[in-house]
Length: 319
Ligand code: FAD
Image (cartoon, rainbow, N blue to C red; front, top):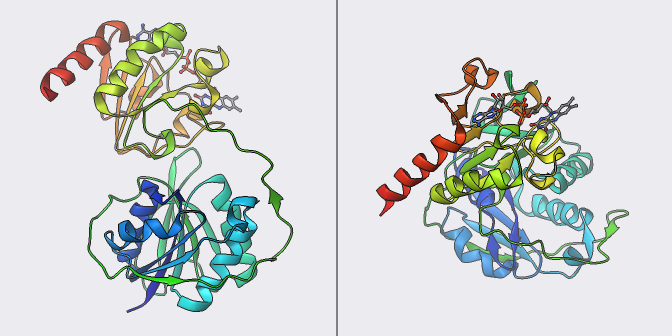
């Protein structure tokens, strides 16, 4: 059966959820082969085998910690040489889009980024992208070389499937071009909530929360649902919530199973970052707010009355 190369994001051997989702996507196209690099990469092999990887190519070379982007391209070029895959899949991120672009140049292959779905098709994988502020879906196929595709988080559900997961040390020839060197690292303060771009549930607040302290009801609902907290640009510009939490055209793009917009009007620039969410719920006191045009469920009401009741009910049902 044809093999599909999946580039895995991991930290100290812990595999990020979008990489596990990619193994499920890869299984639709052929047999997944995982490529995992960097410190602790070998520790990820068991999990990858448990999610459908028939082979796990590993390189723990120091170059991956010291340099950005280029060593990963070097590793992918080596892996493509070993596997001859029908497609290369990477989790979408700023760095991985650059890795994909450089890989495409090296292989002479077409590249498609930010896929929301990938399905098998005649003549190669069909890639679905959501464009123009998520107003249109585009289906494309790479017509030259090995398709290189970055896939957004939550494009598929994680599937636990036992596979061989045979570990192979990958020989990588480094030096594929100039690279950015890492000069220092600083751990980000942890909130205990899932990463915004990867979360299955996102609860967001906008200008309607009225201030930084107003985010308390938004955070409480997010915690009851095990979700991440997002914010509109109006809330971020007002200094109520960090920029890293901004959802939209100039913020993060999210595609969770559930998106709850609270006190957010639904401007096109906000929609651009959340419109591909599977189920959208809005709480807004203005029945004419544009956000209600795209919701699956809408509540016309004051978020300070609705959210605490919703949180209480969810917590009650969990206990
Ligand atoms: P508003 O539009 O002011 O809406 C607040 C809503 O809260 C209203 O609908 C109101 O009815 C409701 N409300 C008020 N009080 C309550 C209450 N107690 N209970 C319930 N509802 C209440 N925006 C983004 O979000 N993300 C982006 O990435 C982004 N990028 C942009 C890029 C450009 C180039 C430009 C020009 C704009 C961008 N914007 C972005 C800004 C965008 O146009 C809007 O201004 C912004 O999204 C509005 O935020 P909001 O919905 O929170 O605020």
